[in-house]
Amino acid sequence: MIQKQQTLVLSPYTELYNLIVPKDNMLRQINELVDFSFIYEELQVNYCLDNGRNAIDPIRMFKYLMLKAIFDLSDVDIVERSRYDMSFKYFLGMAPEDPVMDSSSLTKFRKLRLKDMNLLDLLIEKTVQLAIEKGILKSKAIIVDATHTKARYNQKSPQEILQDRARKVRKALYMIDDNVRGKLPAKNTNADLKDELSYCQKLIHTVENELGIPFVPKLQEPLNLLKETVQDDVEQMRISEDPDARIGHKSADSSFFGYKTHLAMTEERIITAAIVTTGEKNDGKQLQTLIEKSKAAGMEVRTVIGDMAYSEKENLIYSKTNHIDLVSKLNPVVTQGNRKKEDEFEFNKDAGMYVCKAGHLATRKARQGKKGVGKNQVTTYYFDVSKCKRCPLREGCYKEGSKTKSYSVSIKSDEHSEQMAFQESEGFKAQAKERYKIEAKNSELKHRHGYDVATSSGLLGMELQGAMAIFAVNLKRILKLND
Image (cartoon, one colour):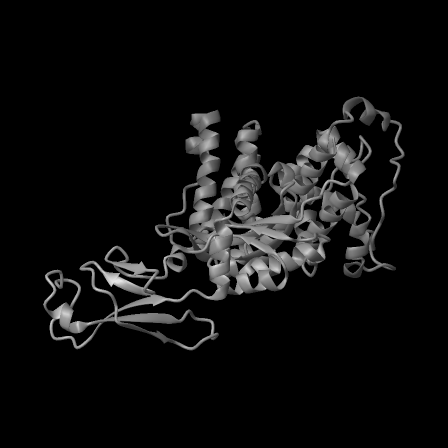
């Protein structure tokens, strides 16, 4: 049963918040900026409303996940910090003297209450609407890009992950007191996950109950991560390292194992849409959905700015149909006409024919391929083969015994021709300079909010992580622009 927290915390110590948490504190500002009551409306179907034990207030649980995204801490550490950090308690709607919950409740909240929610779109829409209400969002352009996130297990076996996290715990112990080496349980040497789990459980028990080592943060944090991996992820680990993660490519010779988050962001740096996919998905295929999601969130889209990945023909047609300027350069294969040996053949605009390097003009041309079927047509230029047979430059150009000599050039579609002209305009070049902003946003997500590595296994877990991280960065941006 949902138990709504009181708007006013009834405690003789409430005044401490006014003394300790300043007006410009980010968490205080978020509390004043956002009406979190929408959480009740969205989650009430996942709770029994008339019987059962009172559940922890869902807004408080949601805010815990926000804190986790903002400060990039484990469940255990975020709950522990809320025990003594007054800004956390104020944000969570707790009285200064209130005890904290057990961190396992966060795991249950994620799995049981949020699993069927489209939280990603919901939270983005809330922040976009808030930005519009505050008069912050004025742009009619979105910048699009994709950022990659490595899978939590990153192609390592579950046993390798446990070994790595146990190793970090031992390393932290040795830095505190090197004499503990002989007091730790013997390392597992078997290639069996159950034996590795058993060793990790023994290590955790020894550290917590037998060594008498002070629990400083350098030890507590890797220990908590090991405990969380053993307790929270064992079921998933036994199934697979990460069944949804896939190999994606950042460049021709650079790859990653994990997920992609496809983003649309305004020039004010407010994220208006996001799609989480497995790592191998094509960026350009997500463009139309990003635009539609941005519109659904309340954004008017007149311009889209992106890299070369978004200039495929289907997107050019979609943009033209919807009166959108697509500021995305065409692939050089298209702009160059997909020609081979372009330095050996030049086009004579007066004759309307190609000339070979020996100065011979093509005698005729023919168009091949069906018009309007999605693929570019090809124009083939034919040369006088009798001249080719005795040409001093025939080596490497004319194949002995051939009855014909031709040169083919792919024909650009109307959409490609129009885009080529557009990308040479001053307006295109000026707007293209705005693309750097989304690179900075990707960096913020990764380096300040832990978005470089997935915090759990599976696509649903990645979507939840994305929802909370994007909600956090959007709110921070609104606060900054609203000053």
